[in-house]
Image 1 (cartoon, helix red, strand yellow):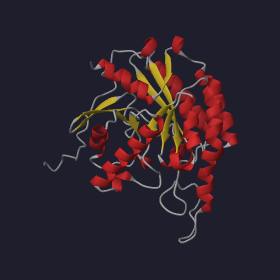
Image 2 (cartoon, helix red, strand yellow; image 1 turned 135 degrees about the vertical axis):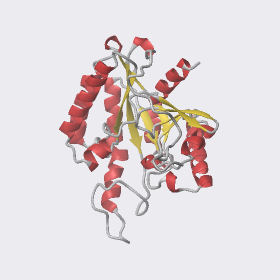
Image 3 (tube, one colour; image 1 turned 60 degrees about the vertical axis):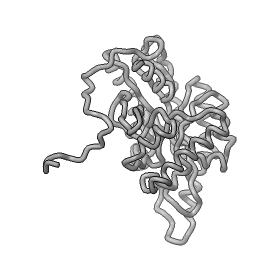
Image 4 (cartoon, helix red, strand yellow; image 1 turned 45 degrees about the horizontal axis):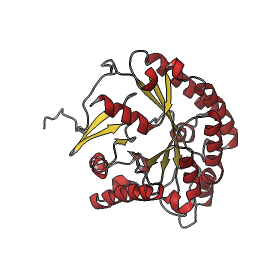
Length: 298
């Protein structure tokens, strides 16, 4: 290998945004928008978790951080449900299978309104990229099987806990039956990724319009986060005059489900949800986006 040759993932080639797709989304729309709701559960006193507050000293259960996140499952997510229902917005529900052990009624409530179920490993207290090949394959297969058995429909998409990947993750996802991944956030449109047994579609998942890195890590206020959502929406809507684009909004109920943030979140989503098909906007789910893109390749 030449000294100036950098290691490449070999999953897809470089393609500039100016190399435009010429199809449209359903209803002759141009901008596909989805809301991703992350339902996660963490092991008490062990494993990984977002650093919301300084961790407890070694050997002491981290009650503060655990309870903070648990607020999302007990309170915030239920208020998300009411908000989405009132705005007639669909959602992609990105769920740890440990939710089925801890609070299955929460996930069942989202599924009852017709939301899309997306695999998200077993718990966000672990990283699949650090697993052995056999353990990672087993995690993916077991997660898919549990969700399929419980709800009668197999999930089409996957987001790794912590967006943690090994070099083999796309191969394992495609071989397990998943049609798309949310792990990569490298474009404003879907990308076909090469795997050893066929293609896996990458659907854009936001790392900027994502409440954890934006609010928790970068310390952005909810007011600024709301402004980001509006500006992203209207800029992409303008850009989508030339080609079909995707906008995702990633939310975690323990963070933006807090009452003072929820109030502003509801307000900005109500504003954006007022723009529908007549203005070129398709409110949808990642799975519906993936299925529509797959039809273009036939």
